[in-house]
Each structure stands twice: as C-alpha cells, then as structure tokens.
Length: 141
Image (cartoon, rainbow, N blue to C red; front, top):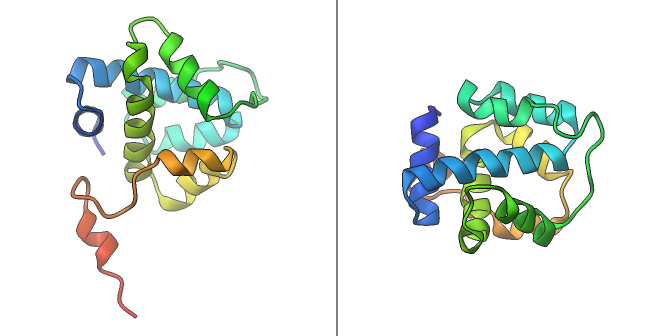
C-alpha cells in the first residue's frame, strides 16, 4: 500500500482531513512502536512505505516494549502535539484497521498478539470496500 493510499484510508475511516490523518497515522504508529517489541515494530516497518516505516523504526523506547492498555494508548496519541484529543480514538481505530490491510496477516497478528485483547475490539472487521474486500470473500469451502 502506498503512503497516500494509507493516509486516504485513515482519513476516510476517521472522517478527518488528509492532513489530520497523516498526523494521526504518524503518532499512532509511534505509540504502537512504544507498545510492541522493537523486532516486531521493525517487521511491520519493513512492509510499509518509508514515510510510514520511519514512525515504527525509530528507537522510541529502546528494545523493551512498555505495557499499557487501549485507554492509555489513545490518551498518549491524544497528548501528542498536533493531535486533536477528540479525534484520537477514531484515529487509532482507523490507523490500526488500515495497518491490518497494509501488511501481511501474519505480521499484523504477531503485533496484535503483543497487545491486550481490548485492541482487537477497535479494529474493523475484514472485508470492507477499502483495499480488496473481494479477496476476503473469495475463500471457498
């Protein structure tokens, strides 16, 4: 997924401008990098465009992940410069959902496995119209 496509998908999902979506995307990915292991952040970054990958590959908290839940995650996003606190929750949801579409299923699942269960509740279900919903419906039994 290209940078512009990622940001546009976040803007559409969060119902914000592309400038706000770009800010929310960067801040959410930086916060995610604080929350998951450095190795997992690097694995995700490897599958993203450089303009997004830089937010994950920066050594924000060293090698160790910091443990915190969804409410704290959203609060940290909302406390960052340039972020409207009222948009933080919708932004986190939009970025994580778009991230799921931008990387392989295994890498996304590995990252989410490092997060509390409550995070899975804010990620939209697979199969929406953005980024190949038809592929999700093409499995046959």
